Length: 69
Image (cartoon, rainbow, N blue to C red; front, top):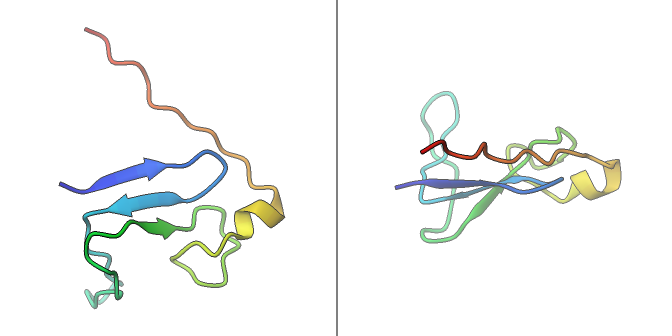
């Protein structure tokens, strides 16, 4: 199962998922390694993170809602 971790003030870390472009062509991703996807919009390596969020002051600290039992 794929896992996506939302990093505070940073990228989405994706583990266990194939990443493809709109034509279905896969991006080269090393099996078993997490990939950081840009969510600040400033990366020069889109869709991948290049650390630009730290230079641009990107701020986002979403948290998952508590599950109600």
